[in-house]
Image 1 (tube, rainbow, N blue to C red):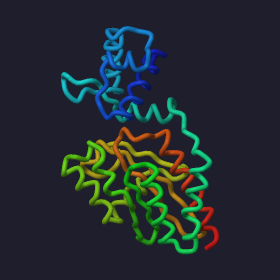
Image 2 (image 1 turned 90 degrees about the vertical axis):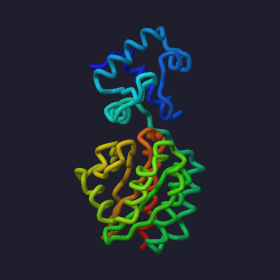
Image 3 (image 1 turned 120 degrees about the vertical axis):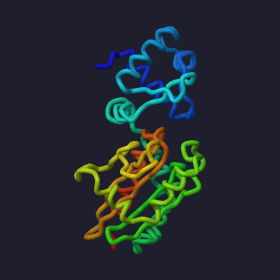
Image 4 (image 1 turned 135 degrees about the vertical axis):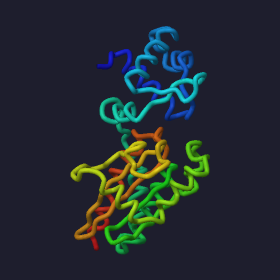
Length: 240
């Protein structure tokens, strides 16, 4: 059971790591969040959070970074989903509107819009094997993908519908969106990645829209973005 101080500290560490991609140290976190305790106390609490599995150290001399367990707690209990600005909602609907009668063009424009809005790799599929994506170059903007083998493994799945379908089918049905973090993604070398996706249904047609990025992805922004995009996709597709 986490104490109130540990929850406050963990949320601060996750927020900082999402924003900076740099391991978080005790002195920096006290200063940046005006925590009501000393750096020594923070170090002790960090050690406890490491023992509990919420933090890890990449190197002995580095700060701490969140684990999959920490991100899961953050998504479920700590973060507040951001409200999409009305202008952004209107702009997305207008962007997709002209393609509403052709499924492949609609999905293609959807991935372009998602990639622009999230600075991540966006993917859309249909149940009959169609795959489209956008933002492949966004992958290399994140240091987690500067390792060539990790970048190759990430981009390789874009040409493999069977692998994508296996990922999308690996969850229990019934949720509006799904978030797979690290080893929850059944693909080698994606341990530092997160896949957020939503199944959609338009009449008899089904598929998935997804965002793939580093585990420190901006969950509070991207999850509501996926939800709204799914809603608009199904709304516009209702005219088919």
